Image 1 (cartoon, rainbow, N blue to C red):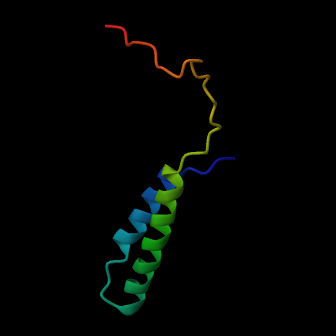
Image 2: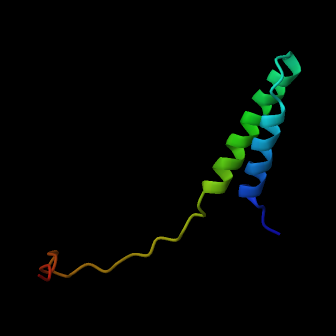
Length: 68
């Protein structure tokens, strides 16, 4: 099963909306949510590494002319 990072981000943003209190617990919870939101956003936009394929080079070491 794959994670739905976009949905997780949405719900975490909503949680931040509900924690608008001016007390210490609300501020601490918002700080913790900010860290989690950052981790989710990083995971959401991280691409899997790909294999690099080598290309053959011309034997003369020169590039062919560009087509016009």
